[in-house]
Image (cartoon, rainbow, N blue to C red):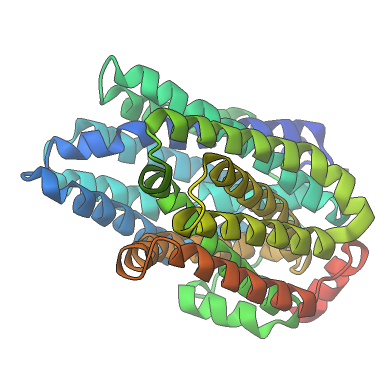
Length: 417
């Protein structure tokens, strides 16, 4: 019999709490986005150094997350998801409070380091979903969470922009407050999802080192192809996220209003694709079919953006390219998350979440540098052409990857482990 604090798979209360915490977390993370450069600008001696310092702060955050994500993920496999979510939320509240108080650049750097070192909430929530969801439903539920992320990404910056009219620091302190709410709600209302029999008895320091985690994942036939494709897919999308507003300005002379509206449209596409379309496609073409179709849509989007940057600077093509890329990324990512989750055991969901979060942090740190180098050094169309070529490689990798059916996934994961 399942206790109140250990929900069975499919538990409605656990799912509602997961949805609530994910929404709060995403809104809290995105409220601060419109004002971050302006907060940093207050402490930069020369305005020309602003982009450098913003890059430094994000790199510090990404590096810290890369280093600790595998450890935090494995910690959730040992002690449960709930303690990690709570600790990560308190860490985020402390980090953003420091960032809001500010006073000097070194305090901002310290705040971003704390944020990265306690960034265990998303891997733990990833694992939480796997704990409470049968294998055959995971891709669909990852898609629903992706749709919620799209809603949060639309709502958060809008709230931040309104609050910034009152005070630049206000959105930062709101982010801290939301993180504190997540921590308190988790303490009193979030049931633990990881059953005692599925917890690992101890944590090996070797298995939480980031590079060791990747090596171990790539050694597993059930994970190798999926992890490689995951990394390949993330890089071109990182190009897009970090450069599309610059391309809009350079190619079609768009300003912040048009870029903001397109960003909102991307969020709507995310909601429709992951919240509705995935439920139709998954039963019909399966996870591999959805992943390949999503990558194909991203190739179309990247090709369209490359044309905008080179020979066809048309607003409609820019819009179509961005929306095709966003739709394909949403579908393929949700199906990929479900397939990877089914490739490992119940006692490794935190380990997997930490590994993917660590890989995402690395790509988040290097993608802005690569896209800037390609865009400035070789031509505005080059990052998107390179991204399309990488996506073709990703299709080949996914086509050859081992993807277990949900019914067999848990048994095969146990053998692979």
